[in-house]
Image 1 (tube, one colour):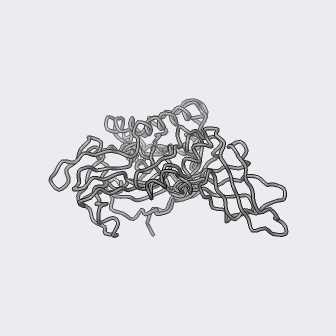
Image 2 (cartoon, rainbow, N blue to C red; image 1 turned 90 degrees about the horizontal axis):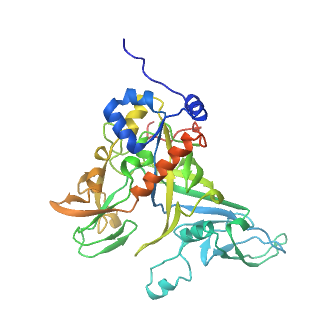
Image 3 (tube, helix red, strand yellow; image 1 turned 120 degrees about the vertical axis):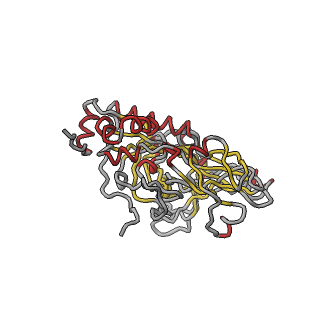
Length: 391
């Protein structure tokens, strides 16, 4: 007799989590389970698959409230450790972006355009318990007469600190090479001339959106691992572009979906939010992000069973094409090939290197697995899933 196809609900999975009965595996582990037992049986046996990624995510930052003074102030310009923050909000609210550079960076005085400290480092310093110098200026009004503020603050002194990242967790990304005759310095790292190296930035089979390629379970309100604490998906991120070529299994062959995420910075850890300085490019923030994927049916088991050899991306020239807005691929490679340490480009063997850390991504997936298995972390049904590009 044919078995009835498996179908689960979030409520059923959460009940199993609360009872300590849920079967939780990482995305890496799921690859072998699906290969050995098939998607239908894997869906019967597994309740949740955990994912992870840890990489520079430039579109990140922090909303914060730094408290009033006497006389009260409506800040129009704000700096934290000489890094400008955006103050066009209200009174003592501001937003500091991860890529904003320090105005007084000593490295920049020696090498114009080079920065070793920026908004991402401010966020890390706060998480490490360090004091930072906050300065504010205002034009003065009848209700906000103060014109200047200067004080040292730590994270505990801020009444509100929200990590709010407009674009994280890119679903796939380019493999970057440089076909020009000079070295170029990019957000994908330094690229040697004449295609002498190739850089990529994805955790491949561990990456969150590559395990739910058609956004069946991820959307507004999805509870996630963010920066070592608990965060939420608040909507699709900027540059979200699901209408790209895909494999028969739905996996995008180039950069596609993105996430907007947020969470309470005060519960996060500097282990998972690290200020980054990229030579010749500037500052960023390395973000640890992990998403649990509920195995509602065999389709979700199939999606989470995707392996590095099934995920492809495009080789893109950052020496000429990218800066001139030219869209051209110099070949397609799998993440299995990228992770092997070398690929073939234009008939030549080229060494590869990741900007993302698979080791840290694996650790995130394992931490999230433990949180769920121990009953500390339940799954949220999204209020609305991400736009998938369909009409």
